[in-house]
Image (cartoon, rainbow, N blue to C red; front, side, top):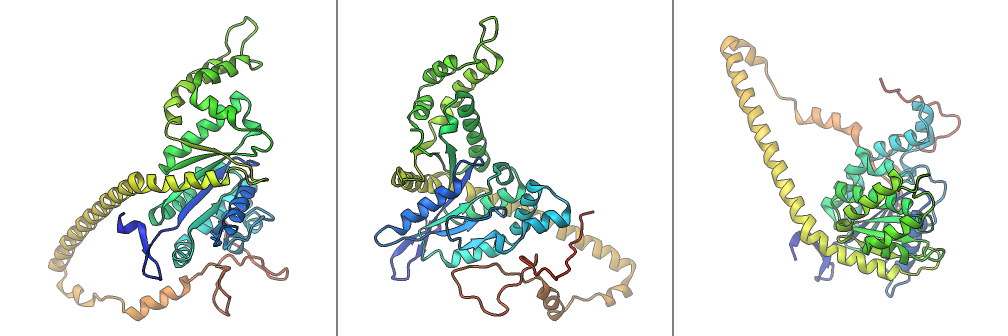
Length: 374
């Protein structure tokens, strides 16, 4: 295995890097409950394997697990809504953007724990589009995936997917996320204690079974007995997605009873191999190309600057005597105001450890007026 995908274990053995599980899904699909269930499963192992959990939902009132890093400790999204005159979704998106500006500190905290954990779990906001289609979601995903093996777990509400139209909508969304992130992908059919997921697996592996279910569904034909436009569209999409299904892992789980959790972690370990064989080489190639492009831009800028300096000095020889570089002390003074740390709840706090730039959870008598954009 490549040395970039391993880390040194304190005992001298080679330990694999922890794998990151990014949970994504529609509102109400059971993401937080699923995170609680896999957290409980890992704690019940012998020996226990407690994961490192990040909560990225700033609007959630309570979570059924103890997060190691919680966005709510850094940003108060209700205060963001109030100060910037935003609605709920705008407040969540802005809060996530603010948190992302400090994500380098999150990575530092996670990397400190890399030798002591095997799994890192991200619980994303309930509004799926806020994470999957925002710049902050892409930055977080790319930053995590460039440092650790990463898999996307797309949580599906199985009972609400029993209708062919809803099933197709979920599959199209899953397809778009897969090709956007280009990461190993697992379809997690949740709530199988309410509705078994066998029908979904059949529809994925046999498009004729899906077309038969679609034809038998009410509203599939118009008043003249002809297939409706939506019926014809979904028939066509089922053929298109047939190839897409071949590259997906699908498991059924019940976050309530714990059924299928072992199968999920088996799929996670298989996804680690996919990451190392397919994603990691592509990432390294893209990183090398980006560094070369940046180096070319730097060299071009330096050459143009040197030419401009040569012209300037030839025209004004005396002016060059006043040129000077800032001292290191001046630069250090400017950087002192930029230090902002995040909260790792595993560590004991001490005075002066955390500086909250957003002044999270302020006192009622404090007067804070955040600048408005524009």
